[in-house]
Length: 213
Image 1 (cartoon, helix red, strand yellow):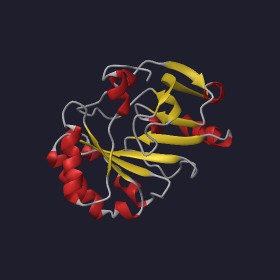
Image 2 (cartoon, one colour):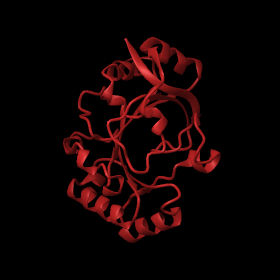
Image 3 (cartoon, helix red, strand yellow):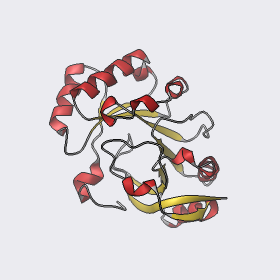
C-alpha cells in the first residue's frame, strides 16, 4: 500500500499544542481546497510514491518520538488510515492535521486529530464538515486561521455555538504577515476566553519561504 508524498523531514513543530517540540513530518500530496492564504501550494501535486512500511521506517530512522501527518489534505488518500494505524502500533505519538472538510470518525482513536476549521477569510468555509465537531475528544484540537477581526469574531461564534472549549484545546492562528501577533493576542485577551495563540514558529525561525522545516 502506497501514498503520494510531497516531502518528509525532521524538524520543530511550528503549530499545535505541541509547538516547539521535535517531530518527524510526513506531508502528503493533494488538497481539495484552495485557501487564499495557503503556504504549501507545492503540495497540491507532484511528490513520490512511498509505501506505508517505508514511511514508518523513515520515521524510526529520524529517531523522533512524535510524527505529524499533514498535507495538502491527508485524508484524500485512503491509505492514510493504514499509515496512521501503523505509526500508532510502532509506538509514536501520532498527530494528523486535516483541513476539516472530510469526516474524521474512522481515524484510530489514539491519533491526535488537529482540525483546521476554515474561517470566511480563507474563502473555503463552505467546505467545513461540521459533523466533525460532534465527535471531538480531549485528545483532539481545533485551529482557526484568522485573516482579520471578522474571522476572529466568526471563530468566537463557532467556539461558543459548539461549546468547543468544554471539550478540546482551541487555537487562534493569525495569518503570517497579515495579522500581527500582538493584534491577535489583544483580541484573545479581550475575549476573556482560554484560547491559545498559535504562531507559526517555523516561519519565525527559518523564514516564510523555507521548505522542509
